[in-house]
Length: 413
Image (cartoon, rainbow, N blue to C red):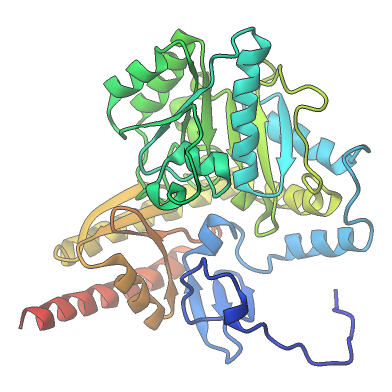
């Protein structure tokens, strides 16, 4: 759709008028196509960030563009006090594809997490146990920037300075099974909240044994299992949902989705079983924009492209190829790459040199990668990326590693 003419040239907003909460790279992009982003000067960058796992179908995917244009000429927004047919259709499709019975649509992943947390506490309240409020999270987690979400993750950098922390949130140490068991056994425990594959926390993937153990632990103590699949869900690991690697019998009770759900359009969802959502009755929750017709049209188109056997097989194929190539890279540069982590196309490289410097060197090579905790960088390319494009990315990483080695040698001298 062409933008209406205004009769005056658009004036960019000076950076000093933006709230200074981002450490922005000195880059601006004008357009994107497939797995590449282009500056106004026409410089092409290989995008292995995908908006932090958002642009799962790349940039300007024709199916999504068509869905947006078609719906944009019909109806953008209507209140949730009315039926929204595409919302009902998308909810049905997501439930058919997953463990869930019901969905609530949001505008973001953080809002999906908020809904998940409220659903879990409301479940116990509806069962006559309002004292069961404790949400058990994990160190290194990231669930969004809203107040409950940052308290659920407990990262000091995101919590400090915002007043008292909220009650009922604690973090277990990643990998400490005894600590999780003790927390789950307390009479005030409500739910365990975890990312099957941590993103910002350093691309740490839960083993199948842990996925299954968490399900069994929750069942044993009558608490709910919440999976944050905002980053790792919707094809990113090679299955539509990361929990599927453990088998359908080990599905969560509640799951938060976003990012790839709209392929770049802001939309999220909280999925739940009917049992877990029993307390979410009329008036218990709501959203002005969540599930509006424009978002639903684009999300339905995105799911139609992602939730196919061909797409998931492609992800598994290129992810296997990428892992093989990165292992070779690690072998060639042991003084740069310490470890390779993650699952599918959510890959983390734990580095010995500073990860922020590494990301800047990557931009010099016209490669876009994301940062991560534990001195990692993340590769989160669009799911449509080819082996050839991944070979290009690895070749760029090879040159970046050589530069890191040269910088280290120079400092030593």
